[in-house]
Length: 559
Ligand SMILES: [Zn+2]
Ligand SMILES: [Zn+2]
Image 1: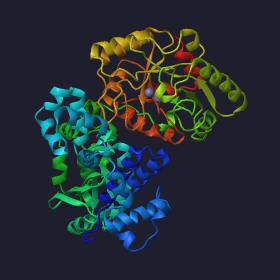
Image 2 (image 1 turned 60 degrees about the horizontal axis):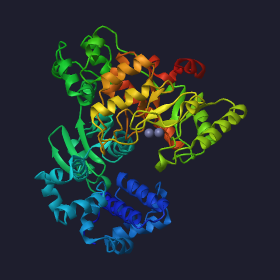
Image 3 (image 1 turned 90 degrees about the horizontal axis):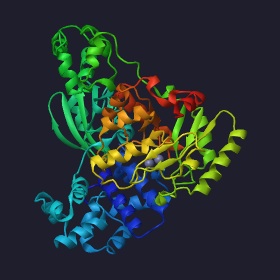
Image 4 (image 1 turned 120 degrees about the horizontal axis):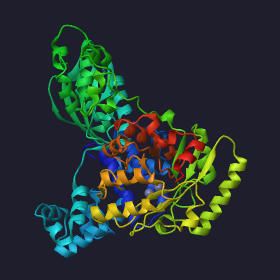
């Protein structure tokens, strides 16, 4: 090996290996283990190649066991591993190039290759640009390829949550910065972060930049001037901006944004820019907003909507917190596609300080997620009765995530639905219906008196798939008339309702259930992402359906 591999390159190899193993129908746990190790490697601030050279024990890092540790050594020393090469030789040669793009679905690519008589990713890109893929295979295919080929730098908020503390420590412990504080999209808790922005205090900015170039083995410096610099890390983009201590508060406001918020701030005399130029110091953001005649605006609200007007008359909402949430309303167990048992989920909810947990496994039509037949559901309901007798300190509510079928009917008959405490009703099929059909489908479903909460309203998967279109105003109006609720699904790759939709629902006076859709006890921890998003929508405690204690909740959800 002449050039040491960066963490990103090593991680790519591991991701590739996971992909090839999956293609060979290898044990899914093994596949998962490789993916987990790949993520660990990708996110480490230290250079893995250096660690291998220094003969450090790699198993000290989470997700790296003995076997994978020796695979990593192979990769660092030889640039590859025998297993990778032999597996790669078994996939059709035209698919080898596809390996570089983990989001590309090989089956779909083969269909395109066949139809357009091409065989390389380069040709694929050309045909995408000329619009041929869309014309020959439809807009969905066009979109799939477009997204998968995009070497996007954006991060989901929870990915940024993994990276930010590492970068922050690196900057203060290795690069000589005396202070580092996250700003930008990340601090405003935007669900997709374009770049991580760190505000730092340092006497020697060029020295910090020089050291940052070694982050994760190698980080590309994309642009820099005397105060700010942009790097490409394996996890995404990192901007660092230097600020003097005396102007820290003003610099933090500026670095946190958003642009529309800053633009409006500028209209409040003397304006943010003037504060930078004045001889006075502004150590904290509170001092900055105070000088502009405003209350402190929580970062989640800084989007240039109505927050400055509200701050000027001390009318900002008192935003929802994780502690306001009394119970979980959307959780899966091993009965459908969850990985932990009902009992484990209940105990984990109690350990998190919740008073109740609603179990909402999938309904009968969703075969792919082991949806419950009527008999299995009834067994589960009996089991919940027994557990409720026995368990202290947690109440288990009877629910189901009921599929909304294509014609708007629900996936269990009414007599079965009537045995549940409430329902979460979701769309998991026929995503391609048009806006009008999808909207009517939901309105129809809401006409059923056993419909309680609309699950993940648009079905979006962030950075993967846009949601189906719905007429949100009509759905909100119908929900209000029929006393239904929305869910804000906290799963970090959904966060569905969007902040915009959640804001509209709140303004219409609807309560929103902030749920995790947990498929494991660990995922109950996703709640904070839903709460972040709820805060961005200006939700207060009383707007969250599950801030209610369960007896009150039961009264509210009855129709
Ligand atoms: Zn669902
Ligand atoms: Zn679910």
